[in-house]
Image 1 (cartoon, rainbow, N blue to C red):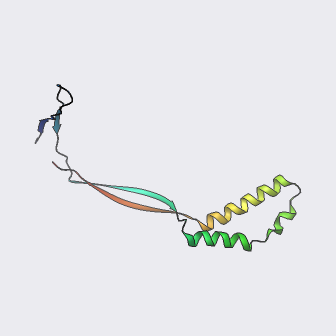
Image 2: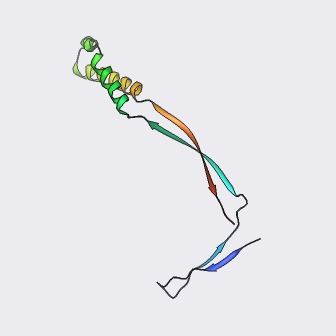
Image 3: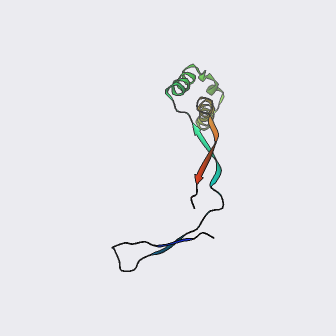
Length: 100
């Protein structure tokens, strides 16, 4: 095995750290990472605002109390939000070089 020993010379203390560099079996370690992201671009913000402005708010008249009305309103806004700003996932391959 090709081990490279060494001493890390540091002037902070009279105790010098000892180290060993061990070779890795693979030169490249590939991993996949999944990234989730929402696009808050100006286009999507305008899309969301437009959907809110053309929404027929009369559906709220069918609810007997303010709590039911509020819950229906929040549900509708969340639906429009999910449409305007969908969550997109992307797999990214990352490679890390390990030197011997």
